[in-house]
Image (cartoon, rainbow, N blue to C red; front, side, top):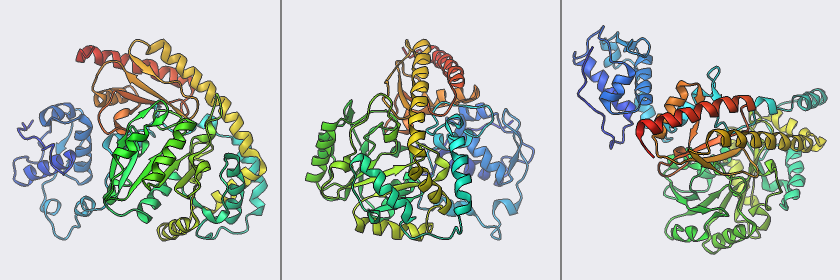
Length: 488
């Protein structure tokens, strides 16, 4: 067993796991670590190096993929190669140089782990933000597919803005929310996430400032940061963004844009009030700040209809409105839409054609049938009832298991309960300990500009029975950590 007296530099721009990989390769190349040397266990390595165990796992995975070590965790990893061809051959392309120098930043390590672990067998996904398999409208989908199968004569490329038939249908559908636009002002995209990518590529120069709620879903992805833009979190109260926060962060010398989820906010569930919406619109108009309104949760109301979208009151074309069926029907369709001034939509559609040459033709054709047939509205009515039942059951489970260790909101729609622990514990440790018990959580620090003691609990994905099992186990883990860390 080798002894390690080195630690990675946490202030370096090089990621921690990459520093560990480079260090071990360097020790192999100099002969300090010889073939057959057994590395310490993952737990011991994390202690020696002063990093999380997940960072060690990531480093060992890369060393295995590059042929330097083999074996499993728990102390069974050995060095198996120090050949010149592996270490320094100029005939072998070093992809790491290309990866490290690329424009797009890697996802947060915790989110990378979430994305990977979501597909592990028997894991209970307490934070997954999508409709669960039990909520999929299989009978309706079968009817639509059977009805439409003979109508599909071709699946060629569609025009830049998307299927005209679907855009006409959406133009009529959006009138339900007071949004009156022509099909020419609608762009079909591969989900709201692609809309954000297109906006970042098409409308904003490097150095722009993106304002958003704090916390915010946008903080958990690196779309804007990868293109050299700066994110600024705005404080909220129970009515939504505090307008003065926009004034403080307006930025006179840089392009500034506001991204907001005013209806059933992700992750807090807050619904921006009618009065606050008008304040936000007026403030942004006075500072000439465009708004991206992400409204993908609107149709998932339970107790009462939410206020109309910001876009409804937009008289000057300041709001780009995002919608999607990823939350309301099925994320696998990969269909969403952007509504905005026609010349802006023209610009976005041009960039979209350069990046993917159009969203799925068959998904657009089927969605057009879903909405025009009335099945979509019927599905939403049933879905709201199911989500309300799941929300109420989750709140009941929380009351039984968390009332002395946490506080939480009661959402009026959407997917999420924003749970705050009463005692300060290591959220990274909680995340890893939960994984050991086959429970996957979304810690609040991935949505925040600083560490916090929150969890995003989603009642949309797991069944009620799995939710009960998962939350009970999670409460035990939290209590154990509180005792270990003596944090109350």
